[in-house]
Structure formats: C-alpha cells, structure tokens
Image 1 (tube, rainbow, N blue to C red):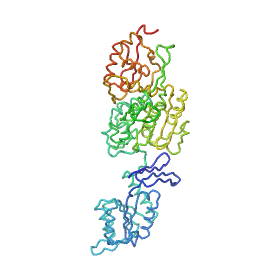
Image 2 (cartoon, rainbow, N blue to C red):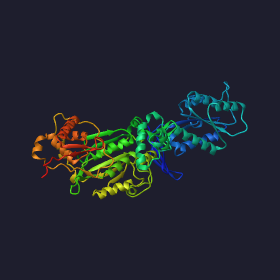
Image 3 (cartoon, rainbow, N blue to C red):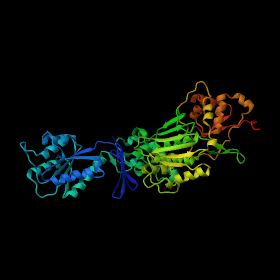
Length: 560
C-alpha cells in the first residue's frame, strides 16, 4: 500500500509514496513529516567475503535499519542475523538473492572459498542477482593488493555495472546512502522537486496543444508584457517556462497546455455542486464535473458560481443602464478558485470541490498550507509560497493571479467592503475557503423547489456546460424586469416564458443549462422559447453566446 512522506527543505518538499506509521522527526534542523501506511519494505541483500568485511557488514546492516529514512523504506539481509534453518547456507543465500530488490556487493582483497566448482559464494550471489535482473550496487575497498581471482571477478563486474570506491566505513555509509536515495528517485518512490516540476514518464510533446500555448502568449503579452511573439515555436515557450527538458514534459505543462490533462492526472478535474438548502443532501439539484486544462477549469468553476448567485440591480437615475453587483464579489470567488486549482496537492486522489449552499459558498482543495504559513497570515500581505511554482508562474503571466502574496488579503477586504462576513479559512485534511451569503436575500429552498417543479411535460435536465463568464463584469447591465408584466403582454406569454423572463431579470448571466434545470424542461425547449421571446422583441443577447448576457427589452408604453 502506498502513502506519502513529506520532507520540507525550505520551500521544497520530498514526497515518498511508501510508508509505515505517522512520525514527526527533526533531521539536521529541518522538519521531516512521515505519513506512512503499512508497507512491504524494499529488500536489500548484502554480499561479501564474511571474514574480510565482518565489521562493515554489521555496521551497514544496523545503519540501514536505524536510519530515520532508510529504516522506513529498506529491509537489509545478512547471513549472520538469520536463525538456524534446515537449508544449506548456499541455498539460503541464493533464495534471498531471488527475493531481494537490491544486491549490495562489498569487494576487497580476498576472493573467498572457491569450493569444488572453483567459484566463491560471493561471485555465485552476484551472478544470481544478474540472472534475475536485480539492481546491483557494488563498492570496492581501496587497496593495493587483491587476490588474482578477486581481481578477475572485479574486472567482470566493472564491465556490467558502475562501482564506487571506499576507504573506511563512513565513506561506505555515505556512498550507500546516496545510491539508495537515487534508487528511490529513479523508481519514483520519492521526489525532491515539486509535483508540477516532475517530468511525466508517459507524456511526450505530442500531448501538448500548440494552440493553447498561442492563446497563452496572446493573453500574457497583454497582461504582463510577455516577451514572446505569438508566432514563436511552442517548444521555445515551454522551455522558457521551464516546462520541458528536451523531449521530457513536466506535469505542469500537461495541466496548463495538455490536449487531455485528465488522461495523465485523472483527479485534476473540478467538481461543482449546488444545494438548495444549507446541508449536503441528496439528490443534488446541480452537479457538474469539469475537465480540461487549468485555464478552462478556472473559467468553468467561476461561471458555475456566478451564474447561480443573486445579482443586485440598481436604479437608472444616472444612466439608461442600471448598475449591477453580484451577491459575492467576482474577484473573491475567482481568487479562491484559482488558489484551489493552483495550490492543490496533485498527488492526492481528491479533487477541487465547489459547493454552493443557500447560506454559503465553500471551495476546498486537497492539501494544506505550506509549512510556516498560518491561517492568520492569509488575512494580511505575506510571502508567496506556491505548492506548484511552475503552475503559479504561468497563471500569473496569464492574469489569473494578480499579485503574489496579496490575493487572500484582497479577498477578505472585498467581502467586507460589500457588507459580507469575512471569508473563513480552514486548514484540515483539505484546505477550505467559506464565503457567507446574505441569507435574507438568498432564495429559500421551498421557493427554489416551487420554480424547479413548474415546467413543460417534456422535462429533461441536461448536463450542458454553462456559458462562459466574461473576464470582467460590465459596469452597467439592463434593469431587471418589472414585477408585473403589462397585461396585454402577459397574455401573450406562456407560463414557462413568464418564469424564464423572471429568472433572466434576476440573473442576466444565467445559462441555458441552468434555465433548463430551474424550469425542469429540456435545453431544446429553452432555446425554442428564447427564440420566440426574441421574435416578440422582448429579449436580446448582448456580446454573443460566450461571455455575453441577456437584455430584456421593454416595449413602448409598458412603463407607468
């Protein structure tokens, strides 16, 4: 079973995917957090001429077993520590070689007893390890004198594997430690770089979408004066962003510009749900699981929230178009979603979740605050410590992140300025931001259900994605529909059309899919009714399907 170890070295971490029990250790004045589950340790077979290396064998055995890291990962074997068995020593040796993962050979001056076959036990063990394709780590003791057969044996070994030299045990211990850590890295059991900077073993440049890179360049040039032309080779851009090394592709490149990111990181999706009450209850009225690159996920999640919350429409005393204010600040919602997607733990089996209730909006992501950053620090300016720096930098260049280390402070201020409670931060198994809505202005569960249950007989909720929210809300929007439609006009509209106009007047950004959900009719029926309202001159679509909004047109003489 796999788990994870986090060793924090400054802003970096060492992650290990095997483990035992949860332990907190101090190691060279740096905090090491081990999060273990029960595991089968990696087996090491230590081979040498026993009489020549009796002390080194015992010391190496004890060192591996008692080291804070190695002891959790490896189980060494030496013959001296085994109990008496009915098998011959040679059969026991070879059996242990077969079941081991790593063969460690200590070679020095002596070849050892050759026996009738003329081959020493050490050479037999080495040959057995080679036959079964075991990882072989060879260490030669520095000496000017070697027996002839030992020299011949070493020459054979040197033609097959790289060997290291040592003079005394401290040197041997250091070389073994380095080799075992490299083994863990090569086997991808541990990593010493952030997840986003780790190169994906299955991906190639064919998995990157050049058009997505060009779109990034266009936006980054506007937002941050990105110093590359749109015509630049996409490989040059990825190299500049440290997302590739030759043909190797970093995880961050796949998440940002991949053709199908979820093919490589299945839990990198965002789950959005709306509940009509204040509790997580079933059935869930609206549930969407969004997939795509990180830029698409941000747009989709923000659109999900902003198309489902209330919008306050002001008067038109100063302009023919009314002021509009979303119930929750667009900046705060966007910042929280960007942070959840940018800073989440991508090694987790969990996903970012966006949950909208009658009284609150909760946005959570797998992972915790980086070591040294507290909840209190989030409410003031602080040093940025991104968990995924190669993801954070492109998001900043794209304009998704406004300024490093100030987002959460501005998030709190924007809510307070709008008369809302300050958002709450929770750092548990997941990191969660909760925004509190004005309950008095939020539609009750009963009234929601009343609208939800009215509609055509061919009710059919679709999973169509909501239309994309524009990057910035316009300062002015059309005033909402009057409480009562003109009498003659009202007679010309069906019940569904009246309800549709009411919903549109309350939220000019409402999507076709959400109208279908609210009215419990099909998306096709919604589109047909919209076409009829347009033909009657009652409804217009401003700025098209993507990023636009609805405008209700008042007929001449409808005002009083």
